[in-house]
Amino acid sequence: MQFADRLNNVETSAIRELFKLLGKPGIISFAGGFPDPAMFDVEGIKDASSKALNEEPGGALQYGATEGYQPLREQLSAFMVSKGASVAPQELIVTTGSQQALDLLGKTMISPGDKVIVEGPTFLATIQCFRLYGAQVISAPTDAHGVKTDELEKLMAEHQPKFVYLIPTFGNPSGALLSLARRRQVLEMAVKYQTLIVEDDPYGDLYFGEVPPPSLLALCDTVPGSRELLAHCGSLSKVLSPGLRIGWMIAPPALLANAVMCKQFSDAHTSTFAQATSAQYLMAGRMPATLANVRKVYGERAAAMGAALRRELGSAVAFEQPQGGLFFWARLTGEGGKIKDAGEFARKAIAQGVAFVPGAPFYAASPDMATFRLSFATADVSKIEEGMERLGRAI
Image (cartoon, rainbow, N blue to C red; front, side, top):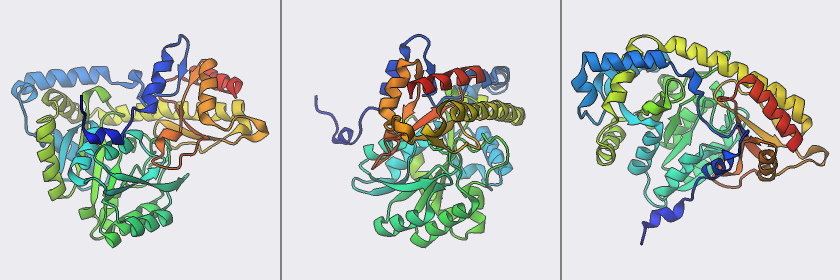
């Protein structure tokens, strides 16, 4: 059987391969990037789905517009406005998770051989998606405050990429928060080099203390000309339910129109039942309380993981305490003759009954083999502390 040549550009996710090792009884897993099911507002979603069926069953169960269910577009518009971004309903389309938005960007923007800049490290599925469409993916260096804008500008000037993909707020896997000054610099560079910036923002609402800087989208008004060069991808997966598969994309009109055309070919429209349920949920005004609860619980778990990492691994590991999101990004120092390869550490950790994800797959190029990702989202404080004890034994 002869498959498409584009499949030669991608390989099976190393993370999904790791999950095959997690069937061992008693494993404590920090490997996934999932929200905790205990955080789902089941009663609120039940009420919302009932209202969707009772009030407009045709809209919830019939075919719908590719652009999205209009009541949901209106609710998502209001949600974005509440976060400081001026967005009209017609300026966004609803996607089947934000992952589909990234796929649509690949379909509409990338021709084989085009260059795309991403952060190093970045979301693994993004690297795979862009490579599937033939992109040459270039990695921009990062630090604890996100992408290094001076290095990013050099890469933009040299490579003239089709677009730059960033997760500015609590990135996956880094957990980094791009500073306000750097956010403005990114928008200024978009205008200077006339290059599209793609802002992926699935974690921006999951902050634990101080509210993060405004999104790139919200800052566009302060940098003339930047709104026409920005695509923003959002999601309800991490704050409401990933099973609903509700995401959205805000983009310049021509890009949005082409994305709608490509979406027509792939799924016609996102589930109308899921959209109607989500619209009713947002209309009911339950999201603020849901977010407050999620922030509190995840904040406690992040604090517990940071304290336990310092206690159990000490100087053998270096990390920045995340201010939001779902992840710790850590680096083995090799101090005291201890392990410095995260792949080797992962194997030893599994033998001790604990799992995490080595960092190498998150790099488009030149991976740092000492890095690894831990998620604190699905384990309670007692499991986190026990898991860190096991990591201490493994190292």
